[in-house]
Amino acid sequence: MSFIDGDSRDQVSLLPPSVDDYVGPEALVRVVDAFVASLDLIELGFNRVIAAATGRPGYQPGDMLRLYIWGYLNQVRSSRHLERACVRDLEAMWLLRRMSPDYRTIAAFRHDNPDAIIAASAAFIQFCREQGLVGGRIVALDGSKMRAVASPKNIAGAERLARDIAHTEKEIAYYLDRLDIIDESVSSGLDDQPLHREGFKAAIASLERRKDRLFKRQHELERRDEKVLVFGEPEAKPMGYGRAPKMPSYNLQNVVDVESGLIVHHDVYNDANDSHLLHPMAVAAKEVLEVDQIQVLTDGGYSNAEEIARCEKEGIEVAAPIKRGAMNSEHFRPVQFLYDETNNTIRCPAGETLRPSGVHTRNRAIRYRTSACGACRLKARCTPGAQRTIHRLVDQSALDRMEARIHSDPSLMTIRRCTVEHPFGTIKRMSGGGRFLTRGLRAVKAEAALSILAFNILHAANAFGLAAITPH
Image (cartoon, one colour):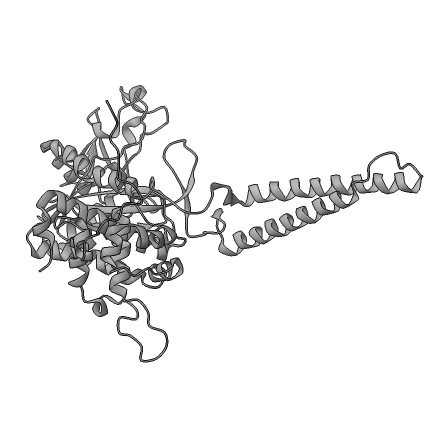
C-alpha cells in the first residue's frame, strides 16, 4: 500500500481568478471586514482618516484596524508577525487586498490610536445591544493579572538597590586590588605570571557603568516616592497570587453579561487590589448597558462595604461572599454579637448590651463596648483582655444585605464563576499566555481592547451565528 502523495511543486495550476474566492463565505474574517466598514472612524477618533493633500500616501486607518482585529483573533499580535502574514496568509491578503504595510507602520497605528481602538471595541458591544443580543440585567465582574513586558529582574526597592550597590562596590574593590598586585609584580621584575591588566580594566569599567545605573535607579525611586518600582516600565506593578513570585503586571478587569457571555465593559489598572474597583467598574457597565437597575455578581475580593453602599445608591445590587479574616476559634466570633439597628446597640452572647464608644476613622468603623465584661461569667470564652470590643463598619448594613442575597440564592456564585472565568481563559490563550506586548498603561489599554474585541467577535459568532453579528 502506498502513501498519499501531493502534487508536484513544478505542476502549473490556476489559482482562483478573484481574491474574494480565497476566503469562504462563512469565514470570520468577513465579519471583521463588515464591522470595521460600519464604523465612523472620524467619530471614534482615529488619526489620518482623511488623506492629506500633499506627501506620500498612507494606509487607511480602517485597513490597519482590520489587520489588528484579525491578528488578535488568530493569535498574531506582533507587528513583525502581522507584516509577514500580509504576504503569506490568504485571509490577511484578502482582508488588506494584497497590501503589505511594514512592521513600523503597523506598530505605529496601535501606538498612535489607543483611545480610538478602545472606542472601536466598545462600538461592537453597542452594535450587539442594538441587535438585541445583550441581556443587560445581570453581569459578572472579575479581574486577572496580566504580565507586563518588563522582566522581574527590573523590580527593585530601596533595600535591594542599596544591597546591589554595596556588592558592586565590593567587586570593583576586588579588581582594583588585583591591578595593584599586577603593578607590584611588574615593578619587582616578576613577569612569570600572566598579566590581565586589560581584562581587569574592562571589568572595572563595566562595574562602574552598572554602579551608575543603580544610582540613577535609586534617585528615580526617591523622586517617585515609591517603595518598589519596575524600572523600564514604571506603570507596571509587581503582582501575583499567594506566595508565588510577584511579576510586573497589570490588573485587567472585565464585566461580562450573564445572558450573552459578552464582555460589556473592561478596563486596565496598575493596582493589584480589587476592593476599590467595584464601584467604578459597575457604574461604567451600567452606563454602557443604559439601564436603571443592574445586578453585579462578583467574588470576595470586591466585598468592600463602602463600595457596596455606593453601588446601592446608584441602583446597583451587588452579590458577593463577604471576605472575613481568620478568627480565634476559642472565643466568640463577631457574628455571634447581634446588632439592634433601632437602638444602635449590640447584644453579646451573655445578653449584655454594647453601646457605641468611639469611631475608628481609618477603617470607617464604630467601636462598641460594655462595662459588664469584668464580672461576666463567659469572659473566658469571649476575650483574654480586660474588655471585648466589637467594630462595626459604618456601611455594615450594606454588607449584611449583600450576604442575605447570597444565602437566599447560592446559585448566584455558580453563575458568576461559569460566566466570568471563561473569558479570561480564552483571552490568555489568545494572547500568548496572558502577556502584553506594549509598555505603559496607555498602550496596554489599547492592546487589552483589541483582545476583548477579538474575544467578543469570536464568542458572538459561536453563540449567535455570523448572520446575527454581521453589519449590513
